[in-house]
Amino acid sequence: MENYGYTKSENNQNQQQNQGTNIPYRSEKKIPAALLGILVGWLALNKFYLGYTKEGIIQIILNVITFGAASIIPFIEGILYLFMSDKQFDDTYVYGKKSWL
Image 1 (tube, rainbow, N blue to C red):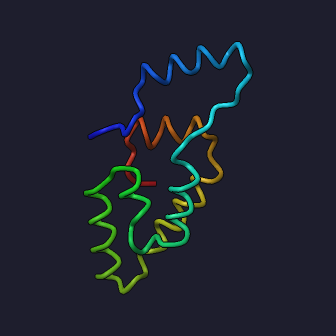
Image 2: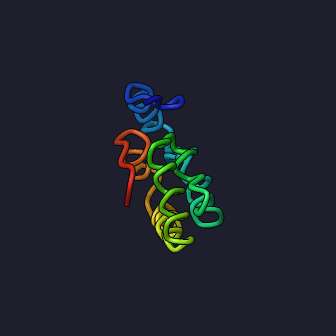
């Protein structure tokens, strides 16, 4: 799967450059993914935004089968995204490709 502009080597170079300038690490995908999960999780937009197409389709099917009860999963994921550090979020969901909670 694509990393959508994120690569390990770019990340390491940015960290080395930021060490001398005290610029905090910022994730470009954390806040949008969290808001999508909380607000429109029943459409699985947070999964599609992070590049997890297969998991997004599974989430939509689960929502249809359970009459929307499975939409609690992306809601909880969105809250977890918000409470993670930016670095931990990127390492887990952008680079590590962990698809579910």
